[in-house]
Length: 315
Ligand SMILES: Nc1ncnc2c1ncn2[C@@H]1O[C@H](COP(=O)(O)OP(=O)(O)OP(=O)(O)O)[C@@H](O)[C@H]1O
Ligand SMILES: [Mg+2]
Image 1: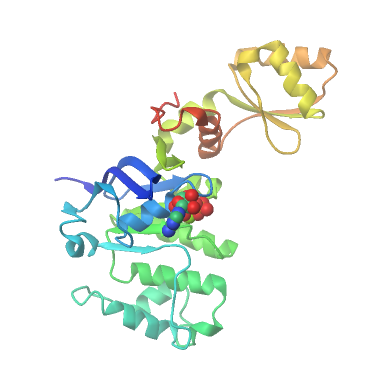
Image 2: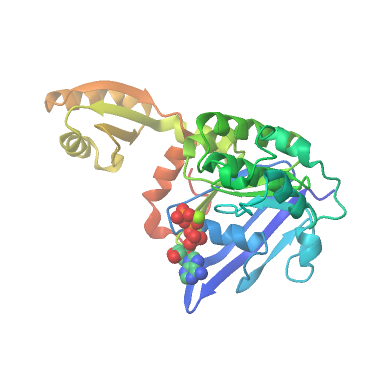
């Protein structure tokens, strides 16, 4: 059985002569949670909107459950649900009524509005007008709408926007639950640590091009292997001293006097000795653990080569 739920092939979107998405290709298998990351304006929302059939693309192809979105849009989108940017609702209607209206799009699906709203902790609010909902409640209602017809592919563009810590925690569990029942999820977010907790795979987009596609399990062993964080008193001075020790180390200056250095463990004592001789105090050294963040930083260092052949070249 073919387990590919979504196949995106050389997807390109041009506006005028400017390509905002350029030959992006990837696949998502059944039950996979895939994170889409990249700087503001990289093209994440545009990619998700094209997959959701909300905007046309210039060239390439999108196939969902074997149906080509261009030739057979209705069948391709029948099993897709999503929230893309801020979900829009009728304010003068209740949450329940909004979902009743939405349910009409799926006459063949078995839908339980009350149960879906309960799952999103909107039991108490479901008969109140949406105008009285907070931002987080609207976001939950958006998720309920996305899940209503039990989609096989869920598209989530920054779904944690406006959610409180409880909401983020609940969303994480909800998505993991959905994965175990076979739903595939494409989720864009700027919260790398959050993605680290839920994703199986990560796609990195820069300037409209795919520049990284990796399984997190693989990344954890690659990025955490040689990455160390050093807390120092004089960060700028420390960067110069590390470069003097070995220019190839190229330390990254992170926040609050923290340097990120990739090197073999065996070299740590020599480096610390060198920093000490230069009068730089090191207060702490620890191994990196957040794999997506270190992967992202690593790719950021290679951004000049984006769009050439940087796909999957982390190791
Ligand atoms: N309708 C449009 N007309 C012109 N340019 C557009 C249009 N929609 C998007 N763009 C441009 O396409 C690029 C990608 O935008 P997109 O919204 O996909 O980025 P993003 O990765 O989702 O960013 P963010 O992290 O800020 O949400 C941006 O440079 C944006 O200005
Ligand atoms: Mg966006």
